[in-house]
Amino acid sequence: MSGMYDRVFTRVFASRIETVVSGLGIEPGARVLEVGVGTGLSLDSYPSHCQVTGIDVSEDMLELARKKLDAETHAHIKLECMDAMDLPFEDGSFDYVTAFHVVTVVPDPARLVQEMARICKPNGDVVIINHFSSQRRAVRAVVNMVDPLTRRLGWSTRLALDEVIGKPSLRLKNRYKTSPWSLFTVVEARKEVDFLPGS
Image (cartoon, rainbow, N blue to C red; front, side):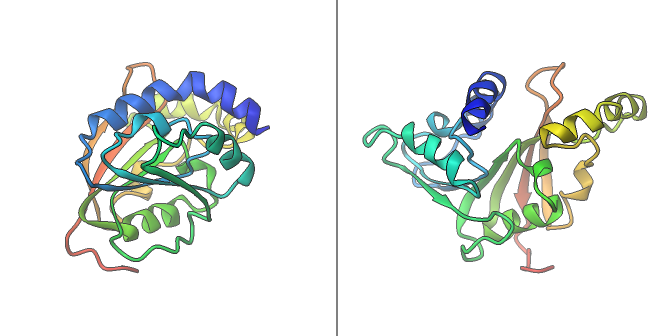
């Protein structure tokens, strides 16, 4: 299953992820956590001047990701198996926290983003690529017709962005699509300085 995921989703998602990560302008020395790193589609996108921790709950996925790591090229990357819904990191541990095509496949998307916000530094960035319900009623109605199908693939069309952004004291910086025909939205949010864990 993880092998099929790798072949299919590399073709579908990898170029979008690379475009988004390269556009962040990640600073030298920055600490980055990628939630749901899966088979490592994003690993080549991160600049070598930052420190990247990629996590996933699936050891099978991580095994494929580890096979892609080169000791020299990817010396700035480490991979760990853990549950993104209950992260062991201290508050404010990372400058960037990313999640690509993950938010709607977890049982509680709001809790996931809350955890991402908690471990992000004040004034740090939370970056998400995901499908979110359209703000236009007609488009939302049409897309939701395929929700039963997408749920079989592991994600829902019905999650609205405001259900996950704002509650964990994240301020929306940018929301865009890399293609006008894309089902997926790129979300860049800034953690508010006065964020309090559990608020």
